Image 1 (cartoon, rainbow, N blue to C red):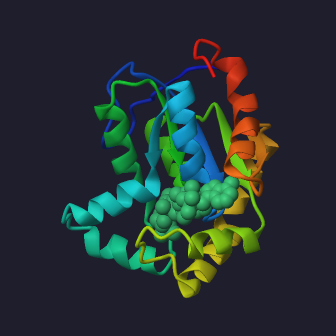
Image 2: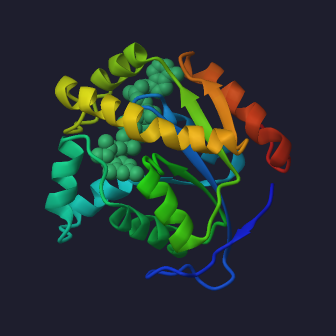
Length: 209
Ligand SMILES: Nc1ncnc2c1ncn2[C@@H]1O[C@H](COP(=O)(O)OP(=O)(O)O)[C@@H](O)[C@H]1O
Ligand SMILES: Nc1ccn([C@@H]2O[C@H](COP(=O)(O)OP(=O)(O)O)[C@@H](O)[C@H]2O)c(=O)n1
Ligand SMILES: [Mg+2]
């Protein structure tokens, strides 16, 4: 594994002192296959998968006071204020015994990125970026069938706009720091995972393929 980063413990919801965690951000457009590949990575390389979208959807279901706001933002394809999402991520990291995490779908804009760094002091080991053409992502989202309120063509278009305007710049930021591992995500699931394995295997040799 690469450098392990220690939490700076500056935020309102702190990670336990000295809890060392390695974080990989998993980014890419809506429908690029982030969740699908995270499931494979968990199985093969022992990471814990934290999907920002899943945590937000669970927060709605839990009847939280923020539920209505989160639900409205997801229906509009907008990005929820980072303090809400970061608290959910911090809690999930804190409650988990593992020390290595895939953070899927976060940071999605500059505000997410800067606030997470400030509050947790965590820098990602690297960013796994699933690069996929919009037409393929659209086809996948329309066929996803998970009953999601945002997988309709109107919201999908809004999510693509947010991705282009707000999320791609975050990927560019990490690219300029040499941290992006880009994967061609248009291929079938198994082929994409072969490319993912090539990124993870050198640092995780303890786990058999
Ligand atoms: N490489 C792939 N080829 C075809 N379909 C895929 C591929 N990867 C994922 N899918 C399907 O596309 C949809 C979106 O995948 P998902 O992993 O949920 O993407 P994301 O989390 O990036 O939105 C799902 O229905 C999934 O089964
Ligand atoms: N960092 C994040 C991640 C998701 N979200 C919200 O959750 C929605 C769904 O995110 P997701 O990651 O589950 O979506 P996919 O990229 O997996 O299709 C986004 O469109 C946003 O409305 C957010 O506000 N902030
Ligand atoms: Mg997803």
